[in-house]
Amino acid sequence: LGVRPADGVNSSFFSARWTGYLTPPKSGRYKFSAKVDDGIRVWVGGRKVIDAWGLHDSEHFEGTIELKAHKRYDLKVEYFNDINEGEIHLLWVLPGDDEGVLGWFNSSPKPVEGKYFSPPKREKPKRETASKPDQKPDEPRQKPKPPAKVPPAKPAEPQEPEPVSPAVLAQKQRELELKPIYFVQSKDEILPDSKKTLDDWVVFLKQKPDAVIFVKGHTDDMGDAQKNQDLSERRARLVAAYFVKKGLGAGRIETKGYGSSQPYFVNPATEKERALNRRVEIRVKR
Image (cartoon, rainbow, N blue to C red; front, side, top):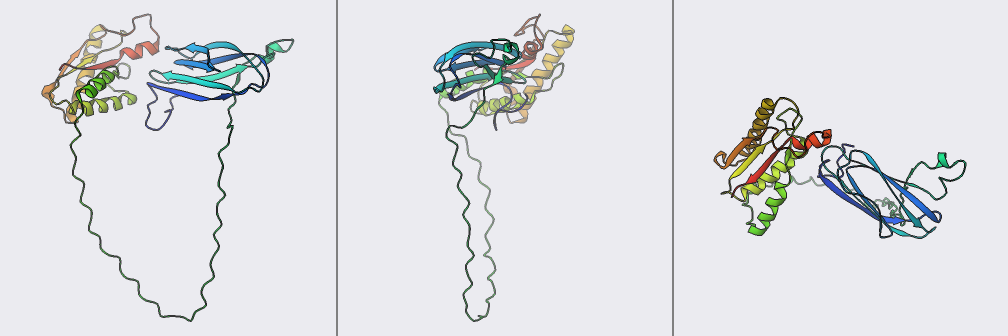
């Protein structure tokens, strides 16, 4: 929860895939259980056992499959997280654990234990043997020479970015426009995970120096409508100011606040859905 999945990857808006093998300890029908926030898909032996690819707030999903003892099956797990914290737990119930008098106690799902099929080999550290000193008469020691003076390296000249084809720029624009900038509730404060998206926009917009940038501010639909309108305008201006600070011309940027008039999700909505309404959208007009 709240942990980055890997270096350089945000804790929001990512997907992951795990692949490996599963060797059942006995034959029978296995029940797989997953607790997930947000989406998960599980395949065992090429068959999809769990398919819950959507926005879920720490919900449970189950699926069953017949497996043979000691047979190696391909295992694939796909997961994605939208905004804020992510969570994934994959469990199973072995055949027969939910039967008989003790079935109620044994049927609790257990983690699917993982291990290496071929553990990596570790090289033993080599022992260094001290060499015996040469038995020679003492010789006069020479004074060490002073180190040669090396002139300080000149700083590298900044290089102009290489030109990018229009098709590549168009694809990058489509990708960026699908990534709103998200904000703290009731504040014009950008969430940390959205700052990288802003920097990606800066790099892209510097490659399109003639483009006009339209920054649209939004809020959730909680609270006073006029306050939401003011907040949406402040959020849009904050993003515009960031662009100017990074070297984009202020004359290229237009801002507008929409208050709570254009939500992604309307009430009744969960807190996670309302968080997606607190956003700024960026569009390139030309």
